[in-house]
Length: 266
Image 1 (cartoon, rainbow, N blue to C red):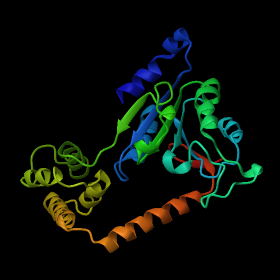
Image 2 (cartoon, rainbow, N blue to C red):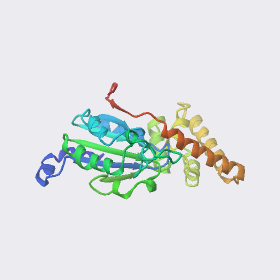
Image 3 (cartoon, rainbow, N blue to C red):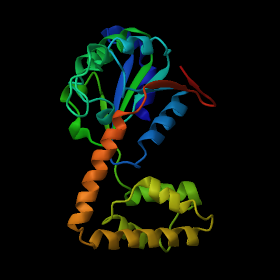
Image 4 (cartoon, helix red, strand yellow):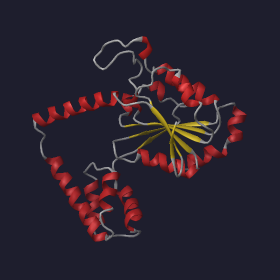
């Protein structure tokens, strides 16, 4: 949050150096690690409006200008799952490889870069743009350079430090608990998201019961991780991934404005 505080304090600095008063963040990591929750926390901390922009079926680059004019100062523009929202750099072909009609040509890499560097920079002050992705390696490096995405924030699986913070928030445990050692040992060898840990801790207000349930969950995951994956299961996973990619292509475009106590679609 210190980076956010420094950003909002530096209006004169941005004016002096001739830069747009904006900042870009890339939040990346596995699903369920808290990327969307961090966006909400940033907005609440700054008291900024949040605009959720989905690019899946944007027809033309010029549509970004219309969407931008719907946003205001002191705002955060979020493009979630940027690696799935657009097939950069070329979106002139459908999923099955057929060329689309000209009136269906979709968002291009150059259009998105112009949006970040030009339109977003020149229309208003105190702007933050956030990309989220589960797969940073799939993004074009041109999207990630400083000046576009100024800070890259890795959202990792739950570690012992993160677990203690969750235990403090959900169970009010600010010191030590006799199950902490076992849980921390399991977390070092298991990939579990903060969302999964939080869900388990919310099942009971009794710390012994909640933490006992978490121990069972972690042990079960450890056993599952130790089991070999058969060929049929591997092929099923591949088919699931392909099906998910096709479904993502069919998402409808929208931009919605999220305020502290209400949400309005525009």
